[in-house]
Image: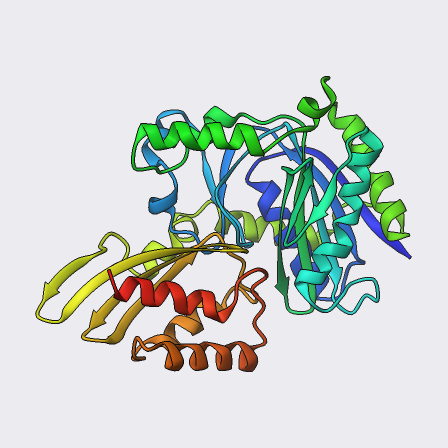
Length: 363
């Protein structure tokens, strides 16, 4: 089985996120073959997950003061600092490809064999860890995410050659500097890099070769080098405009203006706005509710989890408006929503959403 390989090298940092959406749209149109992209950013950029609330998760003042741009991606997950010390692989493949399991969670396990093999070729004993991590000796050495566009699966991840832990910590919105120091210390302990593991500098060229060999060996595929088609270039130009817009960057805040900046506030009588967080296996869920008595009048769901199809999260919010904050009713409503809409949330269950909603109502 052959895949097209687009080895794009160093590209504009915004384009590292726009490119896989553009190629994914072309794939959904049936005009290109299954494709894997290799690329890396030309300058540092903060990249946030599709469902995150920007002003709650990123220190906007620090980023502006130090000229670090911010981009929102179409995949879930959390905020991360991207730079030229990370080599990205971006897999764009038809979900009907016999190589790909139907479940996104199972697709992680199959497709991440490629980068695991790449690390092993470099001399690093990496291994896959559910739901979507690659680890070495219990420490994370690759972050990965996935989404679906029509019948096209998009899975992205990185080979981490080196990492600026302190700068990453400074870009995050935290309650105190002591908390920030703790984040940096924890990252240094539990997130590792190829350079750290090998005690030497691994070049982009060396990592690229290992990644190519890793995918071919692990998946039993052969690569055919290619270039972006005119269709893909046109789509990239369209998508690029969106990625640079404030409307896209601040999407959750603009969609929920009444809830974004207000939490745990009694408005009047039995009307109050409350917020709570819950850490599920697949990521952090943050719920902001406007409650009228025990009824959910309005709801905003954000966080660094993965929700596929991503657009259905707004539909889930609409479904929950008017519901009672009752465990049995909420669980039944959310489970039915999952089944009706064929929702996948790797590492996150309907019970996790119920838990955080009820936690918020009890604050």
